[in-house]
Length: 150
Image (cartoon, rainbow, N blue to C red; front, top):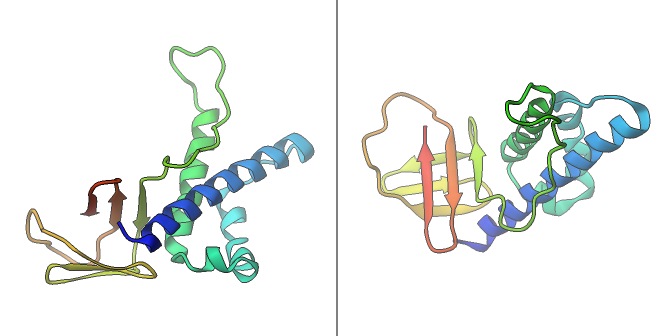
């Protein structure tokens, strides 16, 4: 796996933890629930002051905020087998092993998958791709990388 891919995964984890902290603080201090829209509206400002965050494709960052939204939504939903729901936990190094390009930022050219702001990697297609644009998910494991075009 390339350095930019590791960097992207680490930045995704950092953004996820920061969004959880912001949601917790907003609720505990002001009794206000933040949602995906309010947090994603802050991304341009964050990217302006943090060049490391600006080095990651915007749709990858938006998908991280969607994961955070989903974790908090599950907090409010009824759970079987547990008496009290728990807040989502902060994620340590190694938790993020994938990132998603939901609509754009990637292209497939022959046996190469080009990921925006990361670079190209060789792929082996298990079957031909039909239709137009598909979401691309890159799963990065320590020994092998795998990409999934849905």
